[in-house]
Image (cartoon, rainbow, N blue to C red; front, side):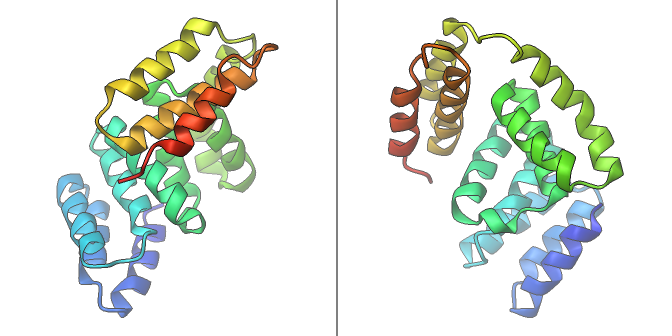
Amino acid sequence: MLALVVTSASAFAADGDAHVLAGARAFRAGQWAEALVEFRVALKLGAPASVRWYEGAALARAGRFEEAVGSFELAWESAPAGRDPLLDYYRALSCFELRLWGCVVEVTSELERSGGPRIQQQVKVMADEARQLLSSEPPRDAIDACFTRARATLSPSLARAWFREAARLGSLRSDAFRVEEAERAASAAKLN
């Protein structure tokens, strides 16, 4: 699984970005904090925005799921083509841990089509639980709670993730409760 990280990092290293390669090595060795530092240094030094996906994966592996969701939100906005099934798995895991059920369904649906057998097996439990929870119309309080979480965070990218979740949940209701408001708020949230 981690060969994807090393392979992609090697391409950046060829362009002179030794920090991405060092981050990939640390990631593979299970040194999440070190990997995170290397990826962040690489980003500060001008590495491609696709490195945000690796930053998110390192945060997820370190159990820092809120930060991971924020990083994945930035990655999705700035480098959607930089993702792969392994990185999407970490995104799904981060969404699952934060109970962003609409995000879980969205990401795992793609993984069920594009991921290998091992990733598909790992996401099945997450996908099944999220789909079960979303099988009936979400209550208004769940959508309101997304707005509360979005407004409580200091991270604009995490706020955007919560607003997007509110829109996903609202779209599952017959009255489309707060969907337009959530979409406007998500668009207005400036990413850092």
